[in-house]
Length: 133
Image (cartoon, rainbow, N blue to C red; front, side, top):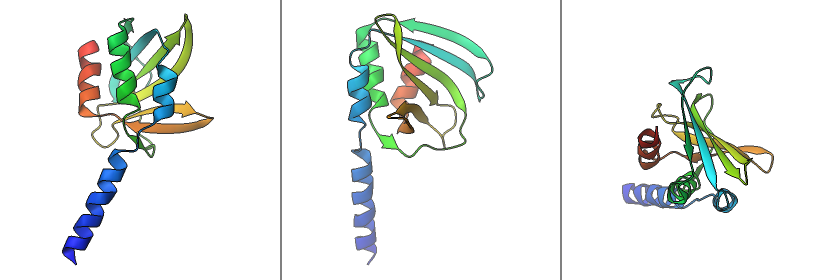
């Protein structure tokens, strides 16, 4: 009986890990720059402590891949540690908020088809965001 429960749990984890958000990946594929706003890091949006402007296509593609990696149910209330603003031809194309300083709420959140959706913010994504700061 224990092995059946274990096997079922493993199957659920495997299927959850492969739940990518291909729509956001496709949407971000044509962007040419991104601005990252870093907030205080305590979950509140009241203070921007750093702003980074990125035009390096390799980094933009890396961020896009990480954002679309693993869809999850949006966790709330989590707060925010920053925001990403993807641009295409000098116009904001997609806004994405992120939470990375709370192990229980590591996520990217954004609007997709009129709904708020979320994807997991992996340790690698956190490391990249910290390096870019």
